[in-house]
Length: 258
Image (tube, rainbow, N blue to C red; front, side, top):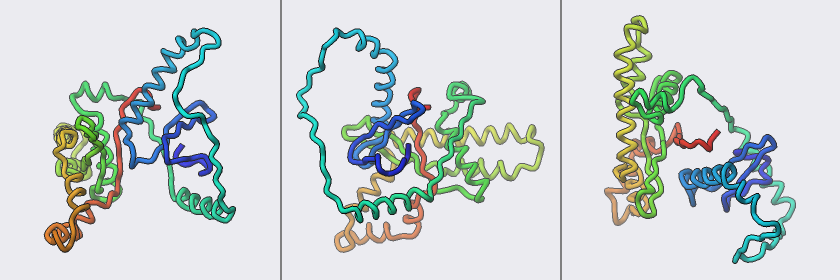
């Protein structure tokens, strides 16, 4: 789904990819669209296939859909074979380092987490922090997207999952010396605090109170000659390090997803 052979993936428009086992997915270039709108499209397609297809099958024989769209025209591209071969090699050079692993958790789901008065997204984010901390002894610079589509022309904002509360929880888990039964109440309290901190950050980001898009806008217009203070700020190593994402994540909750 992610890359295929490279000969049948297009990024100038959304592409529906159906595999031999009947699974399907969407491929698109992120600059022009976000996961929320694409997921809404997928939800509508699944709903139509499940409920509306029967009504379509009952349509009168010979009925044709009307359309004002221009007729399809085959696009011919005259490209030298050497260019195609170079693109093929470059593509496989990008694909080779990638690894894809799917982790399915069937022991519990979102309803169980919500019944415990916790955000499923927050719990997963804290779990990712704990996993990284267990491997590397620190938290990663983490990106999670938050939708700002409640605003006109809204796209996304960044939620930084590596919070102080998450750091305290992860450190406490790794430093447990007493029996787990004795440490559990304290760790549970820290886990709830970390989840609450993340949920609050997500809520603020969705409300337009995040900082990353604001800083990105300033960085885009800052000039060393007209805005020396801004330029000096964005040249700081700390800012560069905070924008080098080590863990990129996104929460897509939908019954259409497998």
